[in-house]
Amino acid sequence: MTSVPKPLKFLRAHYPGMKEFFDDMMDSEHKKAFSEVLSVLGMTMAGCDVCPALPFCITVSCNRLTPTLLCSSDSRESLKYKLSGVKGGLDTWGGEYVKNLAGEIGQEWAQRKTAEKDTADLKALVDEIVPFNVKNGSEPEACDLLMEVDLLPMVILVGPHVSNCLGGFESAKAAPQTSQGRFWTTL
Figure 1: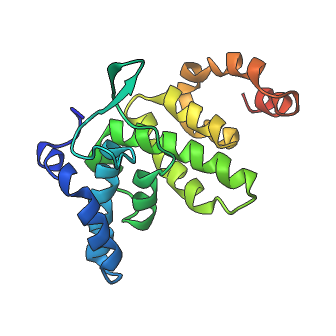
Figure 2: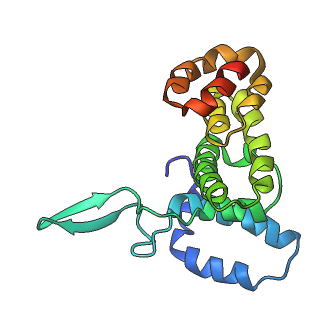
């Protein structure tokens, strides 16, 4: 939450209404720009409908109140709104936003691959995120994303920073036997 601009923090309570407004908007450049704002807010909401105005949820277990930082959710709203928004602009929202998107991309990629659905829109977003990560000194995160979405040959884009990704050799040991050969060939 600290990396979210302060005015956006105050919009959290209005997030459900903003989503409804977005759904009612006609397709336009304004809708795409608004989609960017919803994408960032979606990062902070984590699909929590129980307590949308709080940065945590309070649950009761074993007669104890337990605060949880974020509700678990598979909604991936941040990714949903980013894909419907303006292409590019990752610099505007910063590294935490990009990390969140990368995590949601990994989840969505796995779900689509299992269902044998198209992943072209996700690949286009990966093509934006990897250079952003390299430019901002997050080469290991770029390599992690590439491994997660089965695009490891793109590690060449990381260029001279491949040595930072050599931790991937350890990941190769955990990879299924069928993909280990492809992994070693790439590196």
